[in-house]
Length: 314
Image (tube, rainbow, N blue to C red):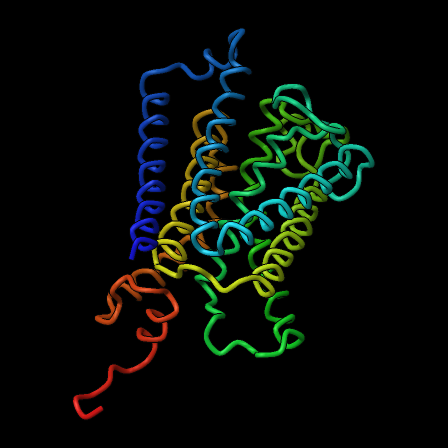
């Protein structure tokens, strides 16, 4: 099927991004004095351009994968709602000191609306999308889910909370890095890594949990009421999202080590994101070892992998 080819294409694009970013970071680490480069007159601009390119390249995959899985209408609605939820949460935080805490954004991340850089609101999209599909991979729900929407609500609430934890785990590394680069400033500091620009408040991570939970729950409601999925290949629902989450971890971990020079922050991030990555990897390996696992639609693969193969007499 043509959609299967497109599914493989989206997955290969993610593999390309993993290799590209790995090679880029190796060159920076091995041959470039990054501390001197970032401390120079163009350091802030280079870092901003790098952040923008990273978000854009991830958004290409999110659009590509999401439109194939859910269709362009549901994909566009999901994207817009996620953006609005993230933007409103950030605006409340910047202007009223609620949700995340008392902070403000500097001018280093580009154009702002009511104090919120557009780049920041967009950056929520990849991690939310990766966490939603990663949670679906870890806890399959398509088979045998309750027919009644009311009965499905507890399931969606639980999945959204697991996904919110997977999302917040990423910020355990990203927030200290961003604060160190003066992308945003916590006015009152915080107890997390207090030696990095006075630290990050615990309320920030509670805000991440709440915002990610709302965004993922809304995404699941839209998916529930939306059209049937157009394509359910393993490339779209398993391999691609797993690589997206892995790339987000890899970049945050690398920045914590190379630019921030804080291995303890990288270790905390690994301890938070690592369980999701390891469980997902174990699931992928278990499915791939099953003789019935061929790369056809995910729902069929999971059912075949979890049920005995029919005998000759059947």
